[in-house]
Length: 221
Image (cartoon, rainbow, N blue to C red; front, side, top):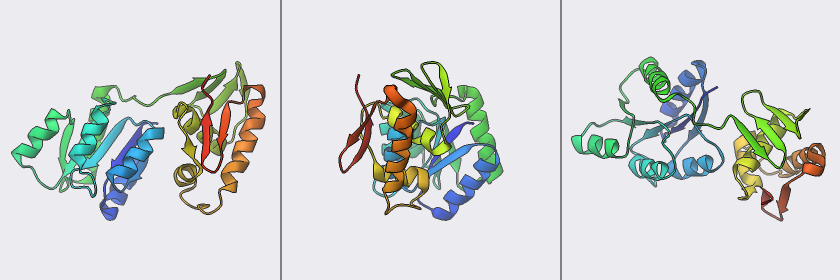
């Protein structure tokens, strides 16, 4: 399932766009501003990103520039204005499409589908491998030294985030935010319990390092 990041500070528009894309079969993650988007992209890769130009803190152009330093992921710019200088700046940053906010949601979905067809539609990793442990994102399965091991969905997602961080610390706060939607925000024990179960299943292949008071990371081998 293709994954899309929406960066939009208008909650009503964000929710509407998220609903239409989800109903079209996409996995959708939303961020309210560029800083939140940067945090999300540190641990997760996307097949396409939709950016509002007029964002608080950091505007869409600056965020697009930061994205382009690391990735060629397709980018769709949402805008309420079509000034020539804005379009020129966007295309210089390799924006794939400009879309007016007055365009209907079904048309936006059609544009997203067309861009993904042209781009091949897959920039997100389909599998992760580290220290004999292989995660398949298509089937949500885990194998250790070639043998399948039963992981719950939450265990799979936690392990995936730690592996994708490639040695960087994944904080308990970020795990709670991404995987529990703040439901257990004040109780980091839920994360620690899942980590304990993951370690049992990894056995001798356990590569998770606890960073006291902060979170977890993958050992650099």
